Image (cartoon, rainbow, N blue to C red):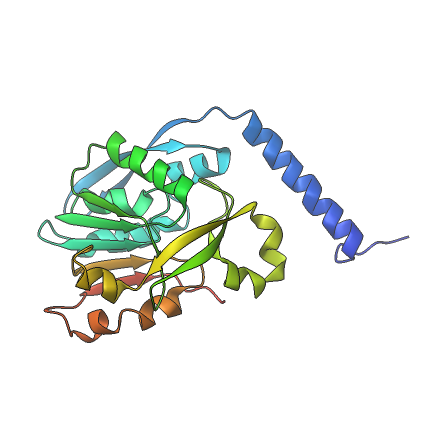
Length: 235
């Protein structure tokens, strides 16, 4: 008898078996510092070090994966007099590369465990020009629920967006109640600088971010970003 992999029970069993295999590997994994580098046309070789918590994170740090081209493009437009805003900073891969060239970097990240790891990575690289901003980003200011599995795992996502994608529910282990802010409100409050360069990767919340940055993106402040690198995800 042939059983389709799309059938409910077999597919669930395969997924659980795969998850068990990866969790077993991570259980045996010893967290350590991993170095990585990228070549920049103006600055030459740029090196950073990051704390790796699992095999998946180590592979991404070492090879830079799909982020390599984004990082190279981002670095190509950054100069030492620029302010950079990293929205969805995660553990600091883009933040730390940018900090090697920029005047300042504001790194926005809502997940509590990931924020602790981000602080450790900034300290590890002795970067004094990085400011960590512990918020989610939306079109308004409010307390929201964030689905997460902690640092080094599936990127956190707003609970409302997870409900729209039931196939993702199993990827998160808990919910955190976090503060969300609009970018315009953060600039009005002086929490972040008006950036010359922005990188945005916030797991389907990009549209909300844009709506909450109307003043910033329209030039209503004294200046507006010159470059924005944004990963778009369906909600």
